[in-house]
Image (tube, rainbow, N blue to C red):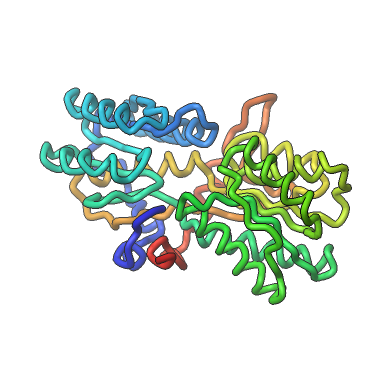
Length: 342
């Protein structure tokens, strides 16, 4: 998240506080969603969560892909407004580019919900608490390291310094880790670009210079898996190594938890739940109900085979256990936001 203010921090609330009885509300007929990057597995599952929940409520959801192009996102959103959709949901390509859309939606009385990143002038945003997500994974990693790694924690952080959200995850991870192992250290703080090729490249270079690490932390699944691939490419055994991923974006983390001896922890962010929550928020704003600036979607660290509590896999398809995921309670407010990075 970028530009999130102290006001948003104070107003962040658990999505459970928004639950209500949707059956008693008027339902929008059509919601338009402009996603920033529909080919990414994370957003595919966000869309799946949206459409599944919308179908339950009798709402049509149409999706347009900005494909990381701000001009294309503006055009798609303007098209939805011209169509007369009842609610608009946007995952911003960047914050600045969406500001005019926020103004126009307000001017034309089109309810707007943002996903993932805040924008100046917005009414509400659905997003996780990034720092908390990293922190909880760090605590779990510290407990694992005390039991299995001799209480030593030397970290290679495969991060993404461009975005405040991912910086918060990395900071949260180290802070959580140090609650269990106070002398935990970060041997490498890398810019993995959030993609597997870049993560592999920078991790390989770092390990060639100094391989004295025993924990790989990735700010998303591509980052953690790229770091692990670099470790394996260097011919190193996975004994004495812990890999911690973030996201739970698709099948990759499940395969890693099942098949990689060192991949033990996943900071799951439940993209389907993000989509589910965005639809609930859309119903709220459509009905003119008061909503907080930040509606928090839950996260949870998964250890080992705990993923089976939340997901099942049939071939190349994963299915979410809604009862289990809906039972995960988000924090009442985020421990830290991007405002704390300034």
